[in-house]
Image 1 (tube, one colour):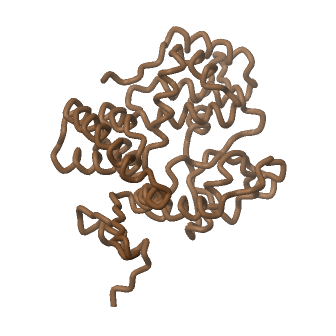
Image 2 (cartoon, one colour):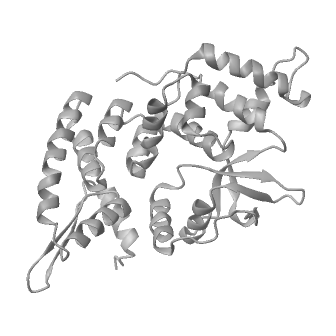
Image 3 (cartoon, one colour):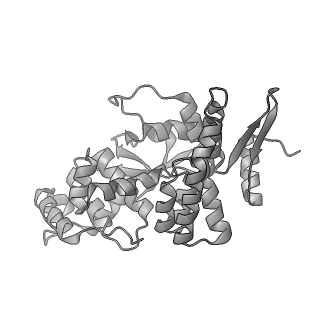
Length: 305
């Protein structure tokens, strides 16, 4: 599958429009935006959690504690994949603009600092221009593109339609790229490191069960499957999913499937629960390398002495 390429003609028009409205401090004498300003707008920095202040105007007040703990456990394994966004305050601290759920989960995970974008004051035009310029780079992977699209939506209040219009793409194309951010962290990181191609990742999106996605992911790495082979594997797994649903359709067994998916996401590997009529059973957590085994032990807080 081909990589998502922005429509440079349409983006160029957008850039020219933004330049006309941008503050002079961001431009050079020739009237063009300063490269340093763009770099600063898209750069990721590590910011101490103790220096981040939650925005009191954030309308969201209630957070699911179980979901936060699950995210915290994932962060312990993979760090934060999607950086927070903050703005500088006069006292040297930072106010949180976007990512309060990640901020709270990072605290639970015991992190001392987090990756963050640092916004400038009144820089909406600069941020949009920086994101559009950055999206024209040829070395971006699809996860980075998805994060930029998501940032447009989170910080510029764009809809998917508006992002698509800015990028000169169909809304469905933008939606499919953003869907990559729903993949388990282990798969997202593999794409970012170049271990997994965009074609593989897109094929895995078709599996809407985390457990199945992780099974296919392990198979790809273990056997070096091509994109076409991965698509065939996904079709096989999709055919097996209805059979699983039939056997877990009763009220007594359906909760176990949800628990399997949650545990699979938590441990980033396949998890199976087998139950017996007498109430006994087995909880099977698969691992494929010694490193994965050690990570699972760490998440279980299992003593090795």
